[in-house]
Each structure stands twice: as structure tokens, then as C-alpha cells.
Length: 113
Length: 113
Image (cartoon, rainbow over all chains, first blue to last red; front, side):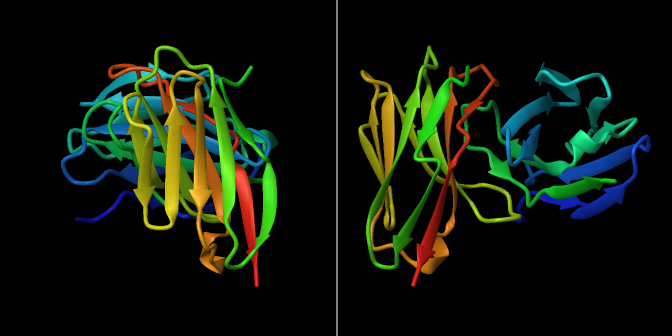
């Protein structure tokens, strides 16, 4: 069974631009969670989607948004990029709720110049 | 204040030696505790998942222990190898239907020949 895939793996943007990241969960998994990871903050929860609905949300500004499609693939969008948005963005899929094991993708390394 | 505290922040050990990482949490209620291994630039990979009723769980040379009374967990690495060099993250799930996982900041382990 294929693992969680994320595209692109690396991205360089400039301040003010917007970016869209994509995540394809493991086949059969309906829950996708997004995380931001920075050296100083560790893993920070962004939001979680289940069956195309945002089920939970972390404490990030509205510039961070996401969606999930009927095939469970998910995208996250960051608008008006700031230097502080430079981070590794990880998505994780799980079969049901987060009480179940989460499987992480390799991440997208975003650099904002 | 982070509800999951890990120590030490980093450590260096010689190949073949053992080491123990600590995780203290204040999350309540508590459903399960997970240890993840994250190689540089990669997504975290699950090592162990323990519910509150489990005291120990092993995965090869990795052994996790849990004391739900004192809210402490440890991850023991036996006969370390160079490939064990990574960040180890402790994650606590508060409940079966709560998606707000609590992440520790991680312990960075460097194994030297």
C-alpha cells in the first residue's frame, strides 16, 4: 500500500505570494491532518479534515486554509506569505480519528524569501 | 505551557551504547502516547503506541515504557546504531474522539562511530 505523498517536496516563494501544497493520504484513509514544523516550535497543528469537512483547527491565522476533496486528497493554501512561514509542512493521514495511528508524509519544505 | 515536555533536548552517544529519552505530560484525559522517529528532512515515523493500560512496548531495539500514574514515559534505545541519529518525538492523544494531539518538542539523538 502506497504511503502518504506530498507535493511539491521543495518550494521557494517570496513574501506576499501565495502557495498551495498537496497531500494524498493512504488509500482508504479519510482523515488528513496538516502540521507546520519549525526548529524552534516543533510540530504545530494546523487543521484536520475528514470526509471533506474541517473537523478541527489549530491556532493559525486565516492566511492558512485547506480543503479536502471527495477522494480524500487534501490541499492547504497559505496566502500573503511571510518570512516566518518558512517551515516543513507535514500532512498525516489516519483511518479514523487521531486516536488511531497517524502516518506522515515526507513533507514540503517551504522557503519564503 | 506545553503539555508534553521532553528531555534531554539533545544528546550524543557512541555507537553501540544505550540511551533513554524522557517524556512527561500533563494532558488529561489521556488516551494513548506515541513515540515517533523523525530523520532530518523526513516525516515522522511511528515507533510505538501505548494506551493507558500498557506499561511497555517494544519495536526492535526501541522499548517504550509508560507510567500513567506519574504521567511519564521513556524511550530506551539499545545498542545504538548510526541510523538511530534522528529526532524522537513524544505525542499524547487526549481522547478517542479528540483530534488535538499534543506534541513534545523532540529529543535530537546523534550517534557517533
